[in-house]
Figure 1 (cartoon, rainbow, N blue to C red):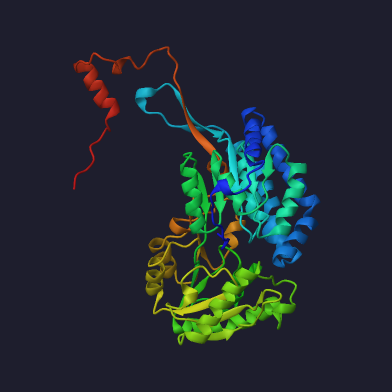
Figure 2 (cartoon, rainbow, N blue to C red):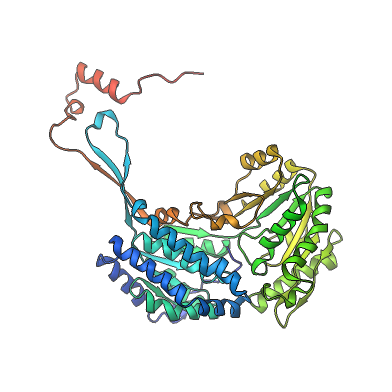
Length: 486
């Protein structure tokens, strides 16, 4: 989900002081049974909500320091996003946790069958840097609501946000959530410990490392990874409105969003119209000079800036198939990269991996069918965005592509729908969360069957078997009608 770089090393070469004790303390709280009652879960969620509201300015300041986020964007995409998730969870948790009834076959009646949700235990949450508050606390909301305790590792690449979390979480969520600060050594040491679920948000390379570490303890994982989320656009749409929405989704957080539009596919005619409107949309959002706009963020660090600037330069200077539509400017001193749109061919370096920055390539295809083939020829994306009023095109993308999410007419916004699951597929991740889906992710679904001993209605299936029992069993257990052949 982010471009976070992390190389797991040999834990014997680094300090692990306190990590084992932290995990043991979280397990002791869980083993005491304190986290299981509904009242405890609701209280912890309310405590987190109180923390976010009472220190919203502290968290907003940290996000501004790390990423240049405007306070309103910090509220929209991180702090307020979390308070909305908490409110939705608190309102519905009691209903979500009720035993789920199952129908019974005739042979077992009378009896009662239910699925009971029980907490898994101690959950490890490893968060990225691009939305460092939201992407740490959103899975924690689900883990606490499901009755678990949590050990959480914020990203060292967002130091101000990490420090804010480490400052306030112990005050508001002591015993429920423990914060482990640090970098690669601490993450490596954490992965040596036994957890009951690991939730990782980041890239696929590290996702494989996390999964391998989890396998040592047969620990289930949720992997929220990244990928190139494509856009398809055709001439049936209002191009002015479409350009504004694409620009908003792409350049929010300076393009450092896991579900940001990564590139746009369309015919020459459609892309020509879009290319005319995108610079105007960018100006509407950020003014004539986005470097002066308080609403436009900055790249997280020098390494990320260098990677993006290098990709952009390589395509513009050395790729004959690339041409600049707008933007292209940068300033290494402030880690500023101008919102940039350019035409590229499918072989451009920008098309090789997730861009994770404010650079939007436009790639020409002959048709919607060609766009579908293009997408299906690559890893399954975390999100796919289609701008078309043609119902046939919409149906084709729905039926013929696979992605973590599919949005028509708007990018990114599906994350704000509490009832929708969020997660990837294939290279873009496994598992899902948000709302009730978080409860499912962090719970064991235990099958419970309750059948009274009297009367013993199962006697007809006990040996010895005779003609009458044989007929009864065949009648009750076998389907009433044969499946039609051919």
